[in-house]
Image 1 (cartoon, one colour):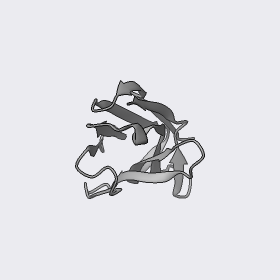
Image 2 (image 1 turned 90 degrees about the vertical axis):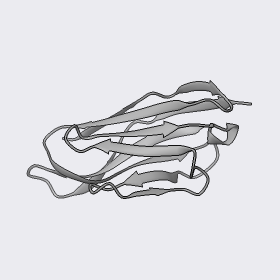
Image 3 (image 1 turned 90 degrees about the horizontal axis):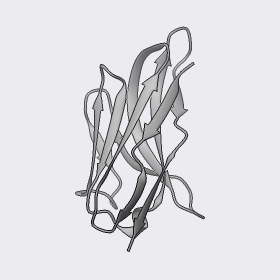
Image 4 (image 1 turned 180 degrees about the horizontal axis):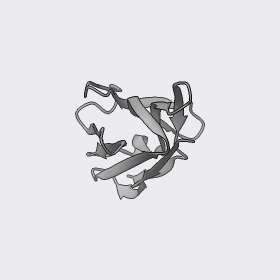
Amino acid sequence: QVRLVESGGGFVKAGGSLRLSCAASGLIFNINTMGWYRQAPGKERELVATINSGGSMDYADSVKGRFTISRDNAKYTVALQMNSLKPEDTAVYYCNADVRANGSPRRVYWGQGTQVIVSS
């Protein structure tokens, strides 16, 4: 079984910064794409940023220039550095990973989510 555990959410004033981290554990053979999604109250879950095993990154237009995604392939971790935060960044942030686990077919796993609240 593979687990994704996020950390680093919290409360911050507009213009501030937060760093989210996510660690995958279990009988992992390899991980392809890892990413961050978010869901604000009353809205659908949306992509924030992704990074593949080769380091290619993709960002939602709303966070370009403010957020940076990174990963450590050896440690099965992914991080999201969030700068210049805005109230509209308030959401539950979810980590996800496209994982090939030992003895299992490749599938996408999700973390439990971490709350980010940005006050104006």
